[in-house]
Length: 611
Image (cartoon, rainbow, N blue to C red; front, side, top):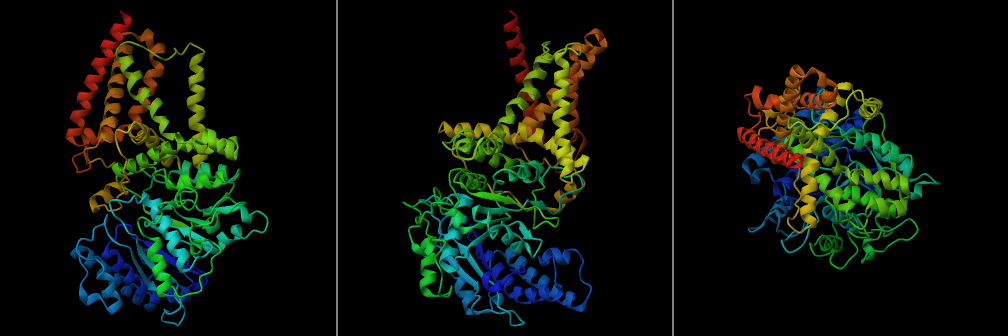
């Protein structure tokens, strides 16, 4: 709300898909605080306009700063007190409007079964800040949900926001922002308009995507949360073609782009939802609110084009990738804007299991697109050309990295333990081909990383997490997607956990891996660590007794040694740590048992082949 932008043209819509009265109370408090905060930002010409970020950086150097910080901490304290109690205290409700709004949570109201709730917390036509300036519109939305209607996860919520905002204000530009992101530059909307209003190519631009930057990342980015390949390196390359993919947050859309191709507009089932519709009534008027509630109903989309040809697209857990892909297939272009000062900052998961779960969800969503009729290798290439088709295919088939990772981590080492070598000797000319590919690939990756302001240690963390994802997120994502195609299991959408305790935070800041929970992810990692350690030890023993076989065993020894170095945090979690984040004993036991079974299967299989 504190953007450097005319407040009468700025409307903020909040989707509370959890349908929590505590969340609505928090926004009521935030709306009251905003009446003081927005003038404070203008007066001091702040660049950092998130109050939490501003006060966290110890910017209190005047009595006005201290007064504002006290007001903010009081507001924050009231919200946290309500969250701890689990209910809203009547003494904090200062108006009948607030009481009536919170009374909508009647008995039987659940997160998955409740009516639509739309509350106008600030109305530009009525509300002003303490200096008399108009306030931006602020609207809270909890869309209707019930067990008999599909809600389509985040894409469904975005489409409800698109429709409700159309009935109330219908601005031509839409910013989508996740709940864990904050604005970091007040002129970002003006920067965006430079692209959307460009007279020659601007009309073809569907969206302007800003990269995801994060705060709170430790020195070496232990879990590779920056995801530089997907969020920085690849978008730069795609921007040189038809434009980058949509990354799910920090993206400004031209509303018109959600309604068909640049040359052929599709019209919604109600004229009030079309991008050219002009709203000439107050957002609090009975007619507008009635229409807003109607288009937020759980069954409103039945028999319409929403999610298929209009709005954010359904059919994949990664609605961002899929929506951007479909828009560009329709002929739209996009822009990747990466200013020196990040436009947005986000929070990150600092728990390894949460990181891997998030990546698994992305892997499943990408594979859903890969094996649909809109496969980038066919539909994408035909619609956008071979280069853009391959660029999108790089994401769609990323989970297939699990195949070589699994072979290198399990099958080849087990074969080596049983006396079968699969790599050429150092005297064989093919050996140098292996060296070329290994050194060349890693050198290119390191170069890309350093060119996007990364460090060597951050790159090491990134490539280690790439290997870890290959044996966990990509592997289990591929399995789950395969089961889905066979009708064996149904997929769900798990929101990444953003809540951590102080001990987890301390371990993360120290760069210590967080295991702590029993998970199939950690079973495969532990198995790979154990198998390659055994392989390396077996190789050393053989070299001692049979030094003439050094050339034959070198490549396998090198690869197992490389895996061991990358798996060092796992060895620490197994044997050297006693804190709550160590590897669970159950996971270690299961892994050892499965390693024994794999070894027996490999031994008898190879023995049978020899015979």
